[in-house]
Length: 480
Image (cartoon, rainbow, N blue to C red; front, side):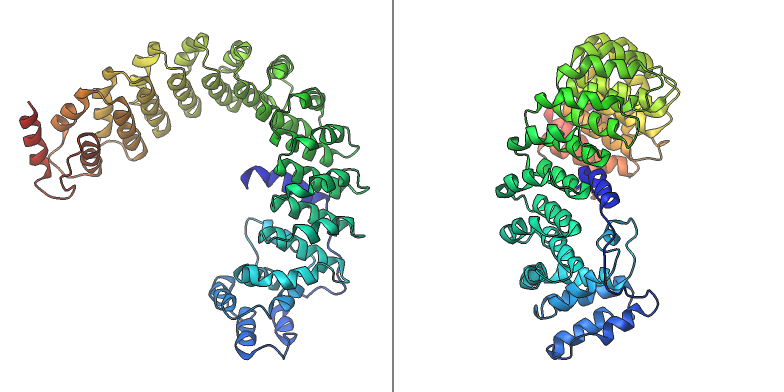
């Protein structure tokens, strides 16, 4: 879901506002809804609906939705009507803080009904109101209800809004049988519909959509171009899309360049390396960090020196992504510059450099990573521990144990990273040195050590028994 946030945002901006005959007034909205509840509902269902739109806050109403979900589906048509009557639905549900309004409560009730709401939603899909049809299409997609055939038919709806919501729903449902229909919709006269179709084709990952999507990279609308770029990045084996995406690198408006770079990152074609390096070197280019990400994903050693140069760039975000990219490429020419970056003033750069050195696996970094275990900030320290685990060298065992029992550390993350690294090294000295280092005083670090000893030896002494410390020491004597 997280990878679709940008595309969904584009679709929201493109879609025309919901058209309704009469929107509910915010003041007294719940009272108006309660007054319209059908009188012929079964008494228990009607009570549940009344309670759902009662005075309770949104959090309180959630319990009532569960009750409603068990009482039957006859309330579903009314709930769809309530959801569709709000001009801002379903955009309400895309906000970071979801408002407590009738449409949102209606959606919550329909969510609880699940498959029981399907008949009402299918009926709403042919309602005379375009807003009701669009809301029904959106809900069928969100509830993952099998409605591919009627939704595919609705791609020819006269309403722009309905067609856009239907196209988006088909992507949510994984409707691979609708690929041909969605490809046809890429030529729709409306930008919102074309954008929704492109996004859904990316979700469906059908290679049949490649050429039509490449064509959309030249769409007159920037939003459609961005959605097409995203979709091409989702398709397998899409190296033929690289030339069209490279053209978008020079776009300055509408974040098109960012969308193109995101697609190039997923395609990871070496063909894009020289153009991306040129953008990386252009200090006026606003998407340099994104270019560094794409170059790292390519795994192309030709990008190594360009990324190394960025480790000292004044843009610290760029330096972080350059370090991460070098870790992905794993070119040993980057080891010395990354070791130097372990002393950077920026904690995030030190951390990224440590992770990259662990990924490259060159023992030249061992001593520097051991020193980084004592970093004042938690993130570089635990990154160093993780990297030492990757290097798998027994010389790191004692420093990692010291880090585990360092009482001066406020954060538990470095300790937990030390435990993971010690388990990864699995040297015979780990168990003996760990037992010798066990403190007399009980602590979270000692508990972690007990658990690790059990994992490494197969012995199962109680972690909370006061005698556990002495039992481990006795166990060590018996092994000698």
